Length: 314
Image (tube, rainbow, N blue to C red; front, side, top):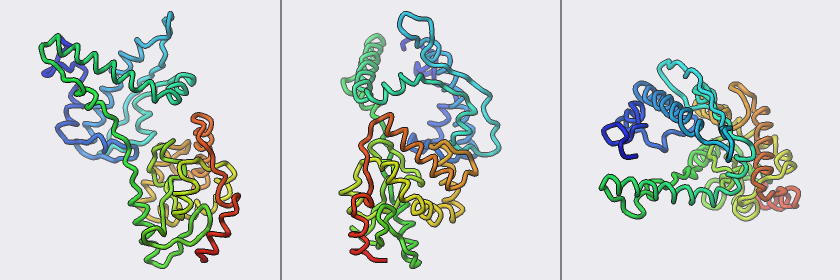
């Protein structure tokens, strides 16, 4: 807004955020589970404190229900964690900075109507910025603000899971499709990596959500549908086995697997694979209830399993 303090008029931008820019910390690098050390960890912690202060003092205070003094959001700031040489962006650390409570009906409405709400917000923000530019005799071109506000979608990257599967195959370890039990082989059109919770409904590339599958199942049968409760329960042992051999048996990947699970699922550090699977079932149910994602009954219930196993015997 014209008149704000600071060298560039951005009064809400403090030292922590500027340190992030100076340290070339990319937005894509600020993902859940990322770990930082040294000056970068300090800058991120300071930026989080500054962002929290702005949220608590401004939108959480002044966003109120119509014709009411009751705030929509309940914000609680807490003492940030003490740095010990590094900072990991997991659920425990982020909660230590404070919490923001969103009423359930508001959350569900934004989820279901987000396709209409987001364009309205972007258009209104762009209009406001252009008005500020005119007041400061610094015109802002049409489309410029919208381009800067373009959302950075998570990268749909399954390369790590594919490389792990290939390494296991090279060691003559048998890899099977979790949904059918059919044997998978390295090479084009012989092995796919499936997002258990579909990317279209839950854009999550965490290790726990990546499962080996046959191309036929992944691309033509399951596609972007949510596995039903019965379909997921039927392949429990296959998923647990994949988690163990692909992720948990490797010290580095096992640590990442746990951090990502704790950040995205209702589990705590040190949880067993069985507990994480139960949390996956809970997340599946929430997606079904909140977004009404179309369900897939599974290859086994459709009689596809035997056909695929005959084509690709163990």
